[in-house]
Image (cartoon, rainbow over the protein chains, first blue to last red):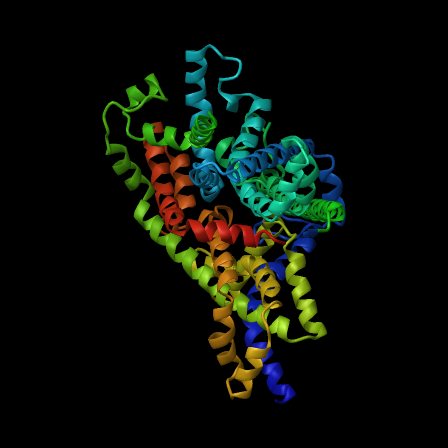
Length: 291
Length: 278
């Protein structure tokens, strides 16, 4: 077959998607870098004034931005721990020989299919009404009160909802990992008199390292970029106490009309997300055990 | 003795799972209650079942229009990305040169870019296309579908690429010798072999696009075009929250998801596990 014909086939197969991908991802990414160096209010008739690094200098003096970064870090760390402990726990429970394991697995995974926006609204009712009711009836008013009115607890509330959403997802990945561990290995350890905890610690956890890598990657990037649950559960309140990175960027651009500054934040956001996920994957990959 | 112990564990696990899902049950029971009953005890079973709030929520959310819109946007986007990404990935795997490698690397690298970094400039690009080329990219379902395909393409190409590498070339070569065109080889021979990964790509994208809020909120402004997440958002924003009606509305939005889950559970679980191996 001729070379020219091969090239034509290559183009026919790849150009449609490459065209869409370029217009939707590549071009916006490049002009996004340009926008981060101008001052502009988003109105097409108004001029875009080139300001160099000014936007970047400004955002590091923006206290609200810095505190949104701090909320995001706190949230991400808590979410990382909660999601993975619960997901791994669920996976260990539903890989036993219990008869209810399939029903339990189905229920644990369910919340993951419901979108973050809708989950946030469901939990808004739980945290406001159901919690106050529980507090009154049980007398445990120090645990069951309206979490969404308290700056620190409303952050925990987002952790709860995010964990509820993602624990089932990580469970599925951990299950696949656990099922990959050969039965003979576990049996041999049992015969040698290893306790359940010893078996978990010396066989299951090391062999699960690839699953840990995937789950940590997914929770880390998911938590860092959280927006939908943030919007529907707290709208960033009370008093911006739970405004995360993504919401701060959205508000800067579309609510306050600071397109240049907002885009500079978006670029910083990209650098952090990319840096974090790459570092995390490299570190955990290195610790994986080869079978 | 041992048998009773197992029974007990069985019940404990089941109870634990039910407690885990309790927010869904709380939502459900409160969607049937009248106001007084709801405020009296948010956790009690309703004394009588009223579907009144479902009716009003349905009207206020324009539920069936939103359902139709969500179905249209999700289904068309997913079919398009499957067709285009599988073709692209196959060509990239089977053409071993520098260009293929650069294209593939670009797809993978862009997976690190968060949506928030692209959203504003993307709107400018689409607005430019609208005003200079007169193609209605904004405020149309087709424009949203176009952008959905662009955003989901990286992951789809990545998953197909990994899978196709393990598909033997011999069959394709035989078909080529028999005079099949590349298009024929791909659709008749290769694509059927990709069934497993196609299911994964479909499931992951259906879940992501069905629930997507931010991109549709930026592109769709007409009321009649709203998808389910959008109409839920406006439902909560426009009216002061009447909780029983709100719970009925949220239950409505979850019904299609539950139906999907019941019918496709096996594929969803498999698809998620396979899609996570990156």
